[in-house]
Length: 194
Image 1 (cartoon, rainbow, N blue to C red):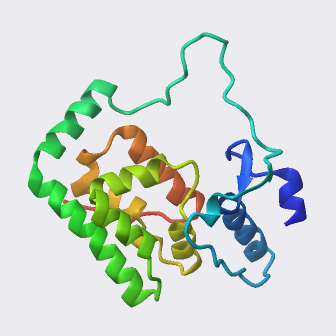
Image 2: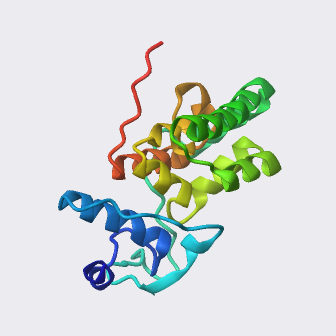
């Protein structure tokens, strides 16, 4: 852990939170054949910053210049039109909401993980907005880390977002975030065939 704090977490923000440190520490220990550490964070404890991130590299751009936008497969307009069309279909939005509730139930039943905070968020703001909030977060949620520890990232919100039938609800940027997070943790969603 001391080495991790000294080196920092590449791709992380300017401060290292418990949520940033735990997955990086877990991967390092598992690679060395050491026991998997335990994660007992509750509430917002994963957002507690412990140190500055030595590996943090601010986005370099000329001052006053436009912010660099990640390359997208579709034009932003096409992606937003596709997203708006999908959101206008209440059936797809309702299916997504039910899929989010379903992964909560499966995580509890199959992995022994009670994602109470996740469930509360889905019930309060709906599955679609909950997924967007999780994707906009600067780091993975404690629930994502817990599912990774249990080898069940297939039950993460990111995995639900990437299901082909729901892709139209999200922008290309949001889909890329979900893909990147899962790939970083070694999970490859199954390819879907029509």
